[in-house]
Length: 294
Length: 251
Image 1 (cartoon, rainbow over the protein chains, first blue to last red):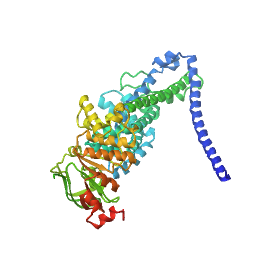
Image 2 (cartoon, rainbow over the protein chains, first blue to last red):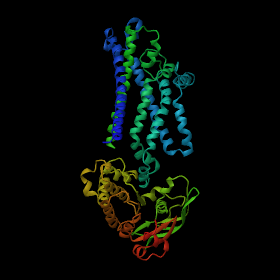
Image 3 (cartoon, helix red, strand yellow):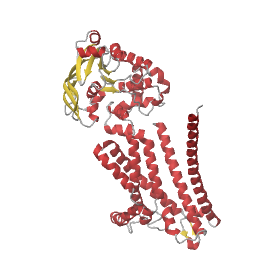
Image 4 (cartoon, rainbow over the protein chains, first blue to last red):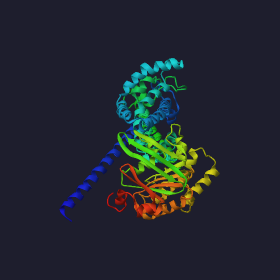
């Protein structure tokens, strides 16, 4: 074998090594993250029972009561509601952008959607605080206007650019010949979209929704500004409550590290991490089952 | 002989570019007509005007008339859905949907409102038999259509078309992505189908046109140069340009 080819093969092995190394580092970071959060968080259970943390909604650290149920429910409710509003809206928007909009409009919309992704969450929070909160107060005749509904509607808007840009890319890759095949059988444009284009792009659309969901469940700043930050179990969509990340950010500053209180905040972060992983796995599972049936 | 399709002074423009120039042609019922000509001569474009697939493309303008079964299909109140049911199309590359074989066939009837399972079952069987595919797939109707070979996929697309009960089948180079054996299968199928359907096939393959069609039309640079019975066309072409093309002097 000549030396030039040997050198090339050696370079090939080196490059492969770089890829493997990168993958290892990424995995290591995730594992370390989980390990660190668990190590610190699980210390909570020295002083607080598992039952109390997960199933009590009484959060009164001064009194050694650490029931995080209201935050867990708050986080889940806000995320699910945000997806329920923002998901369909985003998919329809993506459909418009990828399939209906004329070329010149697409050329404007695409960068506009990306721009929207760059808006800092604190700005959304301000808009929520000054526009949405009073609007909710007046429209629904409630006191305050803080709560799950307000937070979820802000989040629904925040996740739109993610859902739209990923879903519209997915819709754009559906081969034109499938659309033509459907139209040539006498299907209307809408039937073609609904029965052929959307199912074909489903994996990409689900990815968009999953990423939107990940953003919604972890969003701290915008939610913290409109949720009301009150550790009480929400029995309506319009009463002040709290979520895992918003509660952590509110209390982190004045909590001594290593105390039960501090540890319980770490545990909340761990729960948040696991919840978002769980939701992602769940959505993937449901959509993969659906894909097989099609 | 009854003429089922008549085009008169048909012109088509993509923006400023004129892709079809004054096409005048008539096509008889229950015959196979082949469109031949070099790439870019307008034969596929013309085929697509017959079921208005060009509607999907932005910036297309059409003048002149196309009559199918006595109706001007470019008249303002034409029901395009009904037209495409009657005038079905098979494409260059097989384009089965990401569904089971059964659902691919049932798709057409379903979008036209058929929901009864017994009717659908029967249509699926009839159509698959019609496309000479039933024996190969009857045991795996509910597995994905994407697992079939290219030739089977193309016959599935033909079967899918038969299920909506068209009168006219437009085929846009249906064999160009197939191997010789699959091509032969499709050609045999064409012979069987012409008893019931009027078929128009666009092809690059001179032998295919000579073998399987009754009439041949030769297109060049957006014009329809010559159209006559296939036998006469290949043995005794009238136009010098046709002769040059079919004897392989260009194209």
